[in-house]
Image (cartoon, rainbow, N blue to C red; front, side, top):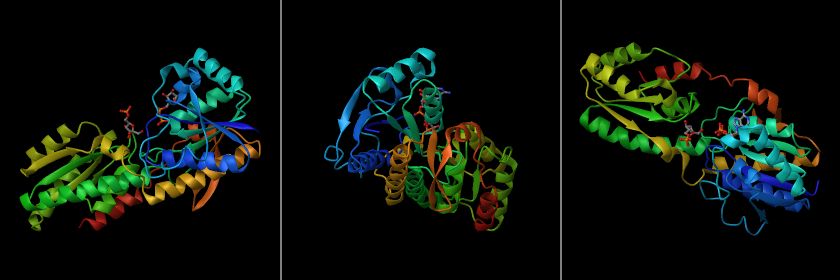
Length: 320
Ligand code: ADP
Ligand code: F6P
């Protein structure tokens, strides 16, 4: 193994830069050259890359986003696109590729591995924390902290005005972000896509709280739950409470990565480079019970990470 490529793909996540830096510096310390492909898979289709060195990845560990840029790349899903990407790798003598991204990016990596001799390993990075096989992804902790600091501010005004706020957080189709954020802001109720039809429970909780003299409240809803405007309207009509809605949106994807996201990025990068040096591919690195392991792409792509529903029960007890 002489040259490895690095690519950031799919939705960006805070800590991607820390991972680029760590992969580059660890690889160089093992005498590997590193090429950073630009704009996700698109960089492989267009053969656009820059040489990464320990010096030119300096000063980025604290930056959100990704210096390599990222995008969603429909062309990569086609036979033609995959062939072009494979050609780029062989034209540049890339023997190993590190893909930093989410499960969609790993699906792409698995398809690409069928067309190239280069070994491919994945580093899980997404604010959604929805990747099978790993307890945590790069960026998740930062997004949780961002959402928590915003919702703490919303709590102030909710209390002053004795209002109910529904706050929608990201997470795509899953509720990992909503559950962790909900527990850590002391939400009165958490709505996740994994548990459907809870609007009546929300109404009951608001009525019961009002009886106890608690008129303000925060409902954390995962974006995958559906139309929050309709949920807000229904709750207002049924409870008579003043309901307001905040969609946190893309602030959750940006900002300086937390210490935890940077640390995870550094640990994952070390494992990714190690796997390539051991001539192992088609694996995603993963955090399992505090240890850095690896999981086959086939599992990551075909299995679903379970959401621990006992956390919702915990949130309910904490909100009484
Ligand atoms: P994430 O990696 O954050 O889950 P996406 O789901 O958008 O983000 O996937 C990132 C990119 O990976 C897509 O734009 C596409 O280029 C590629 N990709 C996703 N799914 C596949 C697939 N089944 N086959 C080939 N490429 C894929
Ligand atoms: O996967 C990260 C994420 O931010 C999801 O939480 C959200 O549903 C999606 O990406 C938004 O995607 P886009 O950047 O394409 O709007």
